[in-house]
Image (cartoon, rainbow, N blue to C red):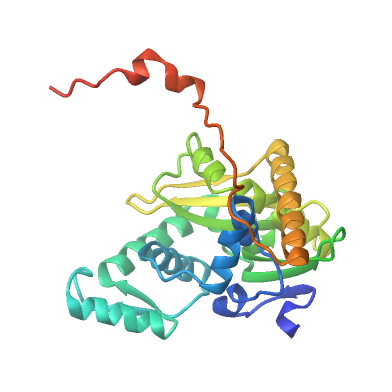
Length: 284
């Protein structure tokens, strides 16, 4: 096991090295295990190819957190030309993040909005970016890992001397009244439990606070700062435990199954049977 995989808190681990680690289990890997161990194994053997949404996320993280892969600005209005696509692909091969000038300008506006925000601004004013944490699960000895976007102290926003684990998310809708739907869909409650568990195991804080700073990609780049409650933590912890147990079983058996080979009964949610839901829509 390399030094970067040892139990502890590590800064400066390149993102590609962190994600290529097969000797420990991450939150994103746990999500795949809950969906299907076969998907987890496939992702390990065939890392996902770069996607535009990944590039935009990396761009925003680079400007706001100050760390991440280097950027390459491609001199083109869009990605439709052959030259632009070739420049994009070449950047990906070199481990760089290709962006258009218009995308960079938009991300700079997002950074300004974060700095001017009365809550998000102070959160990111002091702290450490892209911090990798490694700890062993006490029940199974599985090496767990997590990469916090930002670690800071609660004093920066006057909530006491507690560790703040801050995760920055770009989104199309940061409205706190509706963002919970995306949080549920992407399993962010398990991320919450995962990172709190790592922080406690490493004795960084017995009661850390986990916050999501969500920012909209489109102007005016609205921001919300969101915190899960105890029920979400318990749900995340249950799913975390299930994913770790699946991981152990698959390693022991050497099998990474897909969906169970049986006839699965399908039941619609009650609202699908409402008359108004099934009535055709008059578009005239």
